[in-house]
Length: 211
Image 1 (cartoon, rainbow, N blue to C red):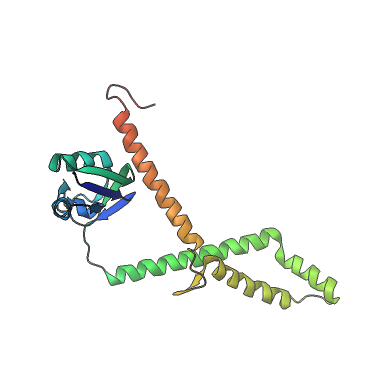
Image 2: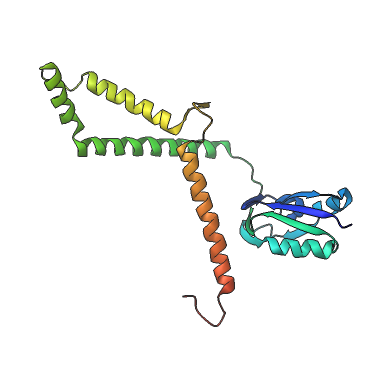
């Protein structure tokens, strides 16, 4: 009776060593422990140490490689048919650089959000609207610094905190924040584009230009 190997692959796999083995890029499960141990250390690809980047690979290439090593093994593939191997060199963290980058991103986000809010208020003429509401309700002339402006400013800040779902390390709910959702969507779109571009280049005949 032949053994069965279950092979699971993610869409984007990150490695930090140029010598890539099967256990570095896939989750493996096999009914035969000895076969599983042999396949864990099976060399898959050797990358150039000085050329970090993204490499598109196919699950069929892995299956062919495994079958050459274990011809009597039944393979069940679970996951992506094509995947991206992201090779990053191990770097030493530079604390000052990370602090400068973090401060720059925070300042850019803060002033960008403030500018967006100010332009919205100017376009919608929120100040004049509050003055009219205050005069209609109270019968007095607004000084520009009333309960409407105060509650609007406080509510705007609280709304941003609730929208992004966390403040510092405290999370309001266990759901991912809208920023995390957008970043994951962006990452999925990038991975899909990279894989489709590589597949189109491979399908394009050499004596014809792509359409």
